[in-house]
Image (cartoon, rainbow, N blue to C red; front, side):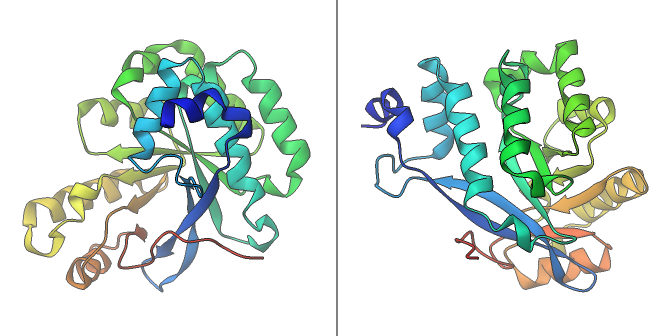
Length: 241
């Protein structure tokens, strides 16, 4: 069923839900992350699996850009003030020959998105080699020049992510949810998070994903984690005008 949906991509119905992120110090709203869903039940498995099937069919760029456009279209961008909207994007999409044209059209369609959209570079083992391509840094620079912000996901998951954090100078890093799990009980995790915060100060924002327990949130506050995200703080849902 999902492979047939990929073949019908131009007609595929999709929608987005949005998970809130919060400034930990005062629990004010920091922004949202857009997450793709399929309302017709055309695909009920892991969304990442669907994207990988699109990759196999040679349609990943089409699916990714359709999702990016849809994430902005179904969100009330006019409501954003200091908040940010995080939208996931594959590195290979940045390198596509038509990407620069797409971004130009995106800004023409959503001029109010200037300075408020954070492109979160998606991690996948299928694109490990792409991070070594020099042009990727140039495309990231292009996005910044056009008023977009950049985030790196799953930081702390491995040495490769630490290297990307240094080389791509993102505006935000999102610490892997591993660090949030039982954070209150783990001195080692607390020390690692403190190191990330110290290193990032004045360079990039730090977001801790996967907060699901109150005790872990309280520990994140004691560690002065700037921003947190997780089911305890809000599940993904539609945002109305």
